Image (cartoon, rainbow, N blue to C red):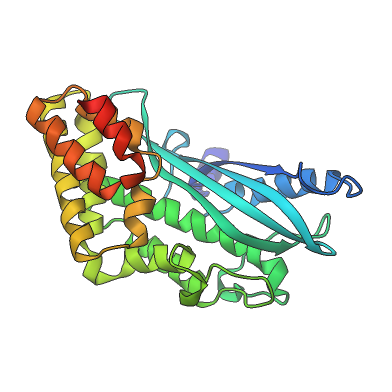
Length: 299
């Protein structure tokens, strides 16, 4: 009877293995820092205890990610201005290496929090009753869906679309209030709106082909078919170059390349002279900030 009961319980396993850190070293010393320890615990619980998909994840399949919430200032009583650093990675087949999915800093994080105040996310009430209080859970939920979408895209062509749509729902119903920014088209060119827009815009479908090819056809084959994998990775760079020429200044390109310079240098360092030169030319064009590194280390 016990066995039957256990078998009747649906298999449930959360998708994220998230680590949230809250740093408040810049906040005035008169503030009781214990509040940020409590907040850190609640944010970890939100990300790790919630089911974000209908799929069952085995413990070793959880997506490793980290969130660093750096409190920069107090805007008003119980309202804080912060930056959020988001990092996520996925394992590479037949190796201990983990390839970065996300390495991004969101500078538009203003939120309201009182100690022991519940930190919850409700998909049907994203705005909540207090915009400033709802903003931080909405931001974390947005990035949770984006991370899951990118992970799914890396394993199957256009596999992440459902989760980009869930993130779009958050964007469309995002909290609106004083100091709440990063959700709207007019909030700048590098924000949550534009990242999601790039990933759901059918004009940019090549993005999903690039994501799949980079990880599944490229990185996942480095251990068993290195030459073929390197060729496939060079093809993804050629696709990104063409995409950039047709769609200059999109957020996705910068977002995708963030933190990948050393990984790409490692890939092409063992390539042929022709592959190195081609990689240098393309990467110097699409990742200008790291152009000198590519030229120096791949020559």
